[in-house]
Length: 424
Image 1 (cartoon, one colour):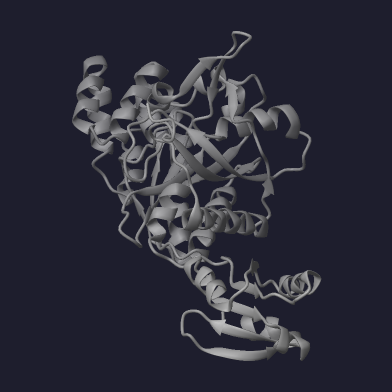
Image 2 (tube, rainbow, N blue to C red):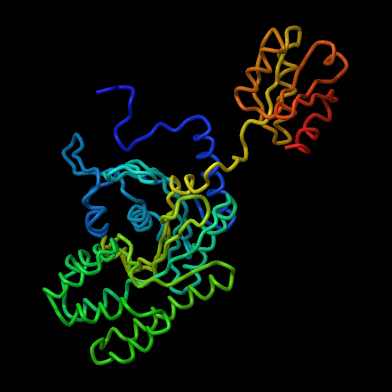
């Protein structure tokens, strides 16, 4: 074993890649705060039981599960929503609703590594607690879209509603664990196998679900009304879910986003109860899901709490960064301050402080010769070199060299930040 290598599916993130991650994290947090979400941090390690009940077949099979030194069965979190519900029940029930939370967190799943899929990965999540109506769903989804737009990721929505699939199987008395298995197969687009296995338990359920999976959004209401006698007490709830589904798609389209219905979208998490959606990247060369979310009303009851309304989403930040491609990263170090011999150290830091006050990032390079300093600055990828020589400094000036164009000018120190800001 090569001890210099991280475990398979894990990565060291450094250099330009680390700057991109920092930039994306910063933008996600900035947009979340702008939309009224508050930050939370939950443990990386949770009790296995927290996720075992409602995580879904695939996630249960890929969790990192182990015993701690006290013999308790714990897991590296495979996602964060269950932790949010636990946190809410333990500490946040007294908060005025709606409760709006955001997080940026590492998650872990023992999956086969491939491009865009790692065993250790980053999620950015938004959760809204205590809102029954469509406003909560749209508010979270819209905030996520604004984040994606802020970093230049063009995207669309694929939308579904798992309440229909669950109701059809509930009508025929199929147990929850079997339902989750069928939904897992549909999530993997293995529809023929899903209907075949469903038929083995209930031919009527298989026929009805198969018919539903073949119709479009505008046909759902008629489909439901024509099966009043079969759906019984489920009908009113499903008509409500149809209105939520159609309303969600309509409002996104009216706001200028592309949103389309897909009856095969069920997502791989067992706690979803109704509306679900995914974000698909349309920019770059990555055409896979970059995140998604939906309704998980009542998940609080699984953990012994009162019924509560929940909606939220998680974005795969690693995949989003892949979708960015070779985009320029805002906020990288802009200027190298090349301090030559004879310049007092405190004066070097005074220049650095002046730049900081105007939001210009900088780093100090202390060398004996200008040529070496310029070489270091260029190799490190700085945009400007600020050369502090004895003669210019005695006149209250510095030389500024654009390392991309080679143009060099003498600038009064008082105007140095403005000079750089107007050119970045």
